[in-house]
Image (cartoon, rainbow, N blue to C red; front, top):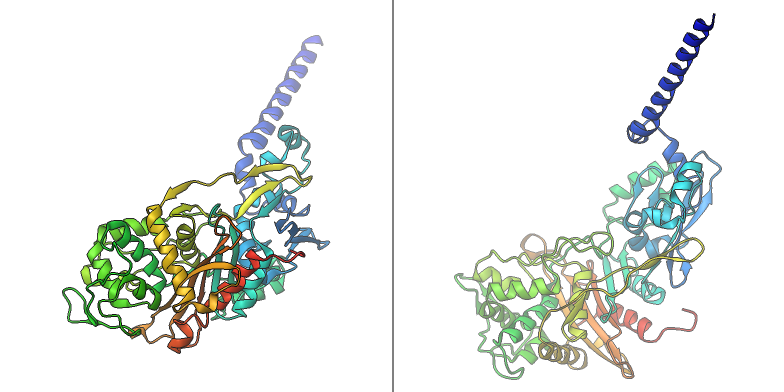
Length: 489
């Protein structure tokens, strides 16, 4: 009898071992495959069982969470959705996440291990960690000024603090309300279809994901290359530039909209945007030096992240001399995002030093404790300090005496560069209106803000576009918001 009991006990132990092994196999070795199985809704249910952390601007949240009472319990809300959509992106139960909602998803959803003091214990007990908060660098007054200035027209604004790289404004219009995509019901599907088929492309982040021909604003880069290379040593000396300028190796002759550009000195050519002078300067500098200078400003960089990715701005180094001439006035294959052109203005304002732009100041736990901070950003010298000083002088002249007078601000030194960018088949499209600028208060030690504005559907009249009638007033409003913050902001 005892023998049968021993056999039964051994069999039970064997079954128990098999059960333990099978359980370990399923829960440990096979867990990743089950977690990744589309039929497994438990991770999704767990993801939405608690409120998501907030994205904050100026000390207050610009996102929230709403208890829907459904199985996927909490949905994202956006109190000022269209204003901050290029910053926040969307967090959708059906369509995923974009922009900061995507780049900082682990913090916002509470899955970042840094948020938990005892991650192993929480994994065992299945207790969720509250989502953390993302504190942005955005200046709410500058963001509002940019948004209101564009007034729904197709375009974008980017503003940077030159000495740090902090992004102060990031606006793209026309915009949309990310809250329309938060849930997973029929209304969300309908909104997704409508937004994706809208010819105005409201979900396109034009500030960082759309590149444009920068037109005459690129002449800041060409002037920097010419001064650094010693091609120009005196701002007021003749440049030996014909008008019209025959493009090298071509029968095409490049003309000017401005007058008195023949043999114009760099100061006059910069103030009144003489195409012929800058096309010839680009050729005289040469493709290698032009490409090197453009790269220093941030062109041809596929890895720029703020923390979400930015479409690379490009300067073509493979063209012939005629194409180099056109590239040097911001045409041909030269393309730039508004953020890139704000980086150009910021480098000039900061004595030739460029800092990488960033959008997140720090991340915190729900309780407020810091999880991570941006810290000091890498800096590199784009041009000689003496070159930057002369460019500051040239850009200030544009605002006081040239085409950018609409950007002048009392009690501040403002530097700027207007531009028009031809596009379309045979350049038949309405030119894009550009303005890049920086501003420094009379009592400030450094420039406080650098701005780039592009308006796609600007007036086609030359006086309205290159004279700064469309884009310069928007830049002025943004700069004033930073220089003269109201007590409520």
